[in-house]
Length: 217
Length: 299
Ligand SMILES: Nc1ncnc2c1ncn2[C@@H]1O[C@H](COP(=O)(O)OP(=O)(O)OP(=O)(O)O)[C@@H](O)[C@H]1O
Ligand SMILES: [Mg+2]
View 1 (tube, rainbow over the protein chains, first blue to last red):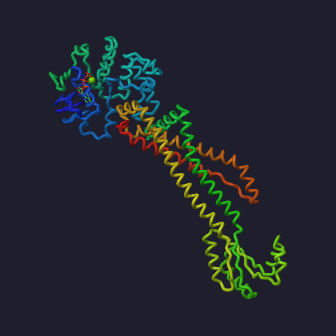
View 2: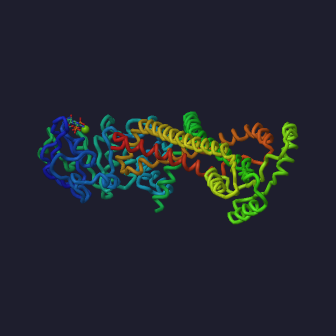
View 3: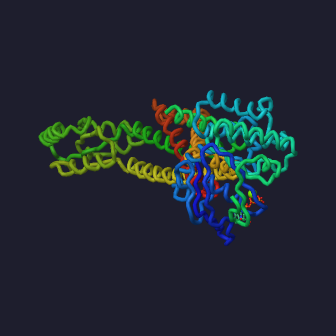
């Protein structure tokens, strides 16, 4: 599903956020990426989501080399991914339901089918009864679950999440972890960035970043 | 195909919703756009009517051919034959005796005519040309002048030529104004869309992250521009209709003075449609420029 080789990312200001990264993630794997603040976790997330391009090296996601991707092909790649951002990127001037409908209308789904899927996704994260609410009226955990519903509504085969449990209490974090496990069980490939120790004890595969390098992967 | 169609439908709906969501802004834009479309359109309509009216009242345009004094029936017959060959319109012969008789009957001229010891007037032909365009009249007069036994050709086309020049100038002015106003319409739409893009930066960013293409992001803005322009066109039509309605009374009185059956014409359905179409096209253009020079919003 993902194959990175000798990936380096240097930002224009000269900061080298990732150095010579190589790893493989197979179809249906559940992988945690961890590391100290500033280690380059979000940078890696941005590279995997084709938001940033690597300075050198290659990243192949779902058969496409992101380093050489045409600009026009990026939207179609994104539609195959489920993205959960560290800052969530919810639209606060749209209802809960409309936030979840957004990726579907982008993909051009017929309204009826889109509505059906959005409801299913909201049901999955336990927000069906809040569909008319505004995101601002949701708790932190609920907002995170809304972001997850929006990420999975397109039924992506690869789910990328950047710190999905930051700022959440243990119980909310546990709910979200359970959600991810259920996606894993139906064959979705998951890459979850976290520095929550609760997640690391569960024997899953772990990629550890330190100052932009992969350590004891 | 279905997805393509529903995408356009959704973009059009979203544009309509946004127009309805801020009625005051929309109203202000429509006033500006409506005026920008109505003024040149009204100017054009006015000129069209002036031209048709002038054609009507100058329909009796005449060219007089005065024959050489002392000529006889032979010369008159010769001219008659030539006129028949050329068939420039209607004509009639006015014998010198008849001309004098008319002069006597003309108020204020009776004394003058009475003082004459002999008839100084020549025989004449009065031609009412079928083609009253100034150039055509001028050509015809030139031909008449070259005929034998024609002493003088009098063409009363100065007025019509002046009108023609005026109309041409006025049309140019209307064209220039139309261009300026079109630019204004494009600029107004450009700015409206620019502000919308800024206001919706988050939505645009998130849409991109979830796989929106450039076309998908641009579409609602383009629809907005086109829809606003089309509504501006409708508003312009209502302004023109309102102006026509309030001018109908005074214009009717004026026309009565001319004693013509001339009826001023408003825009035809095709012209009305064209005005709405032009509004939509210019609105689309303004939006198109706006979305293409916003690299930040669309990067
Ligand atoms: N857009 C950017 N421009 C310049 N430097 C950046 C940019 N984004 C990140 N960096 C730098 O790259 C390094 C890695 O940042 P990154 O956000 O990937 O860290 P992180 O592991 O996600 O940290 P955190 O746990 O705090 O989210 C940092 O030194 C950061 O300052
Ligand atoms: Mg980060």
